[in-house]
Image (cartoon, rainbow, N blue to C red; front, top):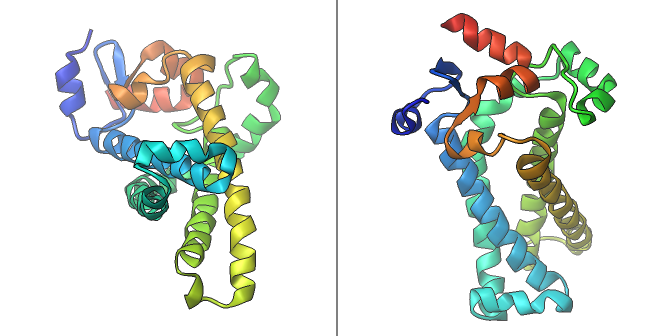
Length: 218
């Protein structure tokens, strides 16, 4: 087994080390968990403000007033953490013919059958990425309007509130699905964002083209 400290300490990624494949660098993992932590904080504080049914969540933040003050700052910190992920991944998230083929064979994916021509990110991950980018941008912009309402015209305020609430709900559903896929549906996935590595079997089963490319690098 590869030396864990050596793997974690490496700044790069996409190479084989012993019986493992380094999938994500330390910087990617730090940014990912930064985003995860501040998304959860923004989501919980937002839920507390969204409905009286969830007002009890304000106790996590010291009360309603504190939750209201912290919520936009959690969102800003979430956005700042997402920027390096976007810059690192944007070129890898371009849509290709192999992604269209993955969508056609989605039933095979759900049956845990191998789809050969899959790179580092499959079509589902790319769609999730772009949905997060576009949805996050709308959440941010609508949130700014809600944060500083008197600085914007009335029609924009009327538009921003329902947009913000709808995207809040959709993001909540998406993150639950993301957690389910990571923890339960695809075993061995979580370690990619904790240790930075996956097993050779995981890589060859879920991302065979990426694994072949990495293996050819030596």
